[in-house]
Amino acid sequence: MPNQKHREGLFLLLCLAAAGICAGLAFRFAVPLQAQTPQTLPDTKALAEYTQVELNTADADALCTLPGVGPRNAQAILDYRAQYGPFAQVEDAAQVPGITQAMVDSWAGQAYVR
Image 1 (cartoon, rainbow, N blue to C red):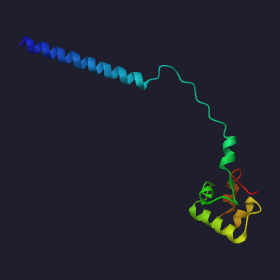
Image 2 (tube, helix red, strand yellow; image 1 turned 90 degrees about the vertical axis):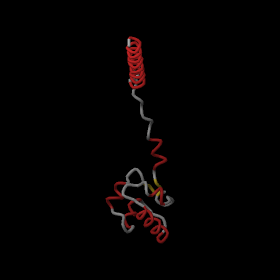
Image 3 (cartoon, rainbow, N blue to C red; image 1 turned 180 degrees about the horizontal axis):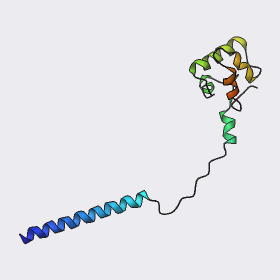
Image 4 (cartoon, helix red, strand yellow; image 1 turned 90 degrees about the horizontal axis):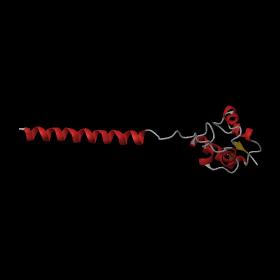
């Protein structure tokens, strides 16, 4: 009987040690050792150059990046462009069926024509 109590005590001690090790590892990997400095965001002005859409050359995917333009409106712009030629100015896109002046106004800084 004393041998069984000794084994139970040893088992409990090992379980407690394992729980302590698990808790220590969890705390070690969950809490950073030192405060991290906030990461600064890259300059997006150069990125805007690549995200602007030229209405006279853009494909449907590029047109879909404009606010309010989905696949149907993008196709309408492509069809209008094929039928009537290139846009003289961005505001001319409001003549495309399904495109409103408010939508065109929301494209400021994103859409352009050459």
